[in-house]
Length: 129
Image (cartoon, rainbow, N blue to C red; front, side):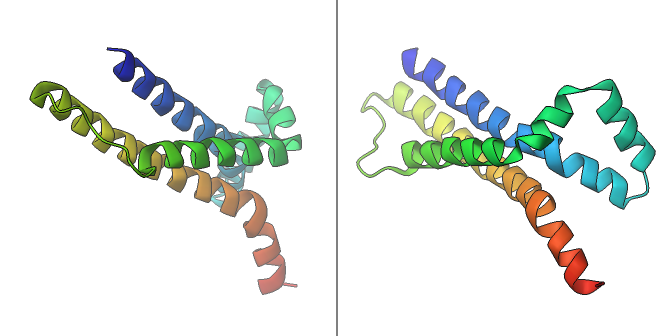
């Protein structure tokens, strides 16, 4: 029961860390790119905490990267085994499978947020000076 709770905590922490980077930086850029700049402006005016997130994006991306790296180490560390009991081993294997999926999905979300927050503008300036 305790390992199941710890697994859930890691999953929620991973998902929260990657999603905040997506909401703060990637979503507004995507909205502007597809021609919904007014929606982005309305979102920032109605949700003022997004401005603070965007201003401190270096800290959010750094912190979320550390959380994702720590979660990856926990999931892929050497010597990690499941219990010998068949019922617990099955639960452990299923939880491990879902945690790995969640980690890879969260890592993908983080990469999209990073690409839009840090690489999109320099790339556009390089393509169209």
